Image (cartoon, rainbow, N blue to C red; front, side):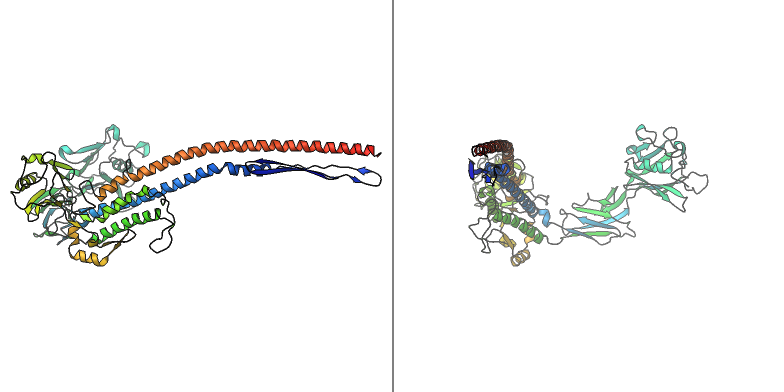
Length: 606
C-alpha cells in the first residue's frame, strides 16, 4: 500500500508545500518485512527570498527616486558650469578692455622699450633719454690680508670665517638702505643669532651665507669658486635695484682690503617727454598713463628713443566666437535636458527623454536668457532724451524723486534747483556734476555721454523719472555676424562679420556694450550673476532643494532597510520553526506506521 499526503502554506502570494511519502510493505515467502521511510523538506532561503522580493518593492521605489534626484543634481551642476562659462564670456565681450589692446614699439631698443595696456593712448609718441640705469649692489668678501690683493678662502665648510665673527664681541652687520631709512641686521641680535658649524663652533663662510639668505632682507649671498678648487669668495648682492636697496657690510676684520665692490647701487635717471625722473627701478609705469617704459641703456651723443603706441590686432572675432561657443553650450545642454521622446530633433530623429522633460520649469530661467541675448548689444554709456529741440524747451521730469544714475551712484534731479527745468537747465546741471558725463543738444534731443577717463570700464548711464522717450544705440546680433538658428543656438556668419568689421565693429564694441540692457541693473550679465549667486541664485537654490530631498529620502531608505532586515529575520525564524515541526511530524508518522505494521504481523501469526 502506498499513501501520500501534501500540505501547502500560502503567504503574500507565495505557495509552499511539504510532501510526506511512506513506502508500502513487501512480503517474502517466509516473512513480511516492513519498512517506512519519510522525507520532509522546506527551502527556507528560497521562500524568504521570494517574500522579500515583495517586501523590498517600497525600498526599490525609494532608491529609484534617490537615483533620479541625484541625476537631477548632476544635471543642475552641469548647467551651472555652462551658465558660468556664458557669464564669463559675456563679461569679456562687454569689457571695453577686450577691444583695447594697443602695442608699443621703440625706435631705439638699446635705450628703452615699452609695453602698453588698454589705457594707452593709441597714436601717441613718447621720447625717452637715459642718463643712468638703476643698479643693484654687488660685492665680494675676500679673506683678510695685509697685501694689496685680498686672497680667497681656501675652505668654506670647515675653516672659520677670517673675520672671526660671532654672536658676541665680534658681530657681523649687514645694512640695507642709506640714511634714516636704512635697516641693519646683526648677528648680535638675539633674534638673528648665527650658528657656527666649524671646529669648536666656529662660524664658516657657508654659515655666513646661510645666515644672510635667511634674513629675508632682499639680499642674496652665494659662495663663488674663483681660480681653483681651494679659492672661494662670498658674493653679496641686493635683489632689488636703487639706492634705497644699497647693501653694506661691517665686522671684525672687514675693511676696504677685504670688500671688493663690483657694482654700486644707484637709481635710474631719465628724461621722459621733457620730464626729469628718478626711480629705483628701470621699469617706469607712473609717468605716461597705460605705458610701462623699460630703460635698457644709457643715452650717448644726445640719442633718444621714441615710443609709439599703435592699435593692436583686432580681437572682435575671438570675443564673438567665444561668446557663441559659451551660449551654444548652454542652449544645447538645455535642449538635451528638456527633450521629449514624442518630438523630433533638428535632424528629424526621435528625441530621447531628457531628465527635465517632465519638469522643464526647473530650467525656465533659460527663456529669460534667450530673450535678453536676442536683444543685441546696447551702448549703456550714452543715451538720447528725445522730444527736445531747443534749450528753452521744458522737460517732463520728476524733480522730486527723479535722478540720473552713473554706475551705482545716483544724482537727484532736485539738486537742479528748479521745479520745471528747461532743456538748457538740465544740460547745464549735467555738465556741472563733474562725473565725466557731458550733455549736448542735438537735432535728435539731449545727448548724454560718459566721457570718463576710465576707458576700461566707463560707467553706465540710467535715468529715472523722465517721461520723454529715451533712445540708446543698439547693435543687433545679426549685424555682428551672429545668426540665431531654429534650435536656439547661434551660427557664426563670416560674411556678415567681415562686413561689420569693415564698417567699424571694433569701434562699436570698444565702449563696452551690454547684452540685454534695459537699465543699469537690468542686463544679461547682471541676470546671469543672480542665477549663479551662491546663496540666492536659481541654480544653487534648485541644487540645494534637491540635495535636501535626497538627504531625507536616504534617511527614509536607511530606516526602511533596518525594518526590512527585521522582517527578513522574522520570516527566517518562522519558516525554520515550521521546518522543524514538519520534521517532528514526519518522525511521529514513521513510528506509527512501524507500530501498525507490527500489529498486522502479529495478527497474521507471523
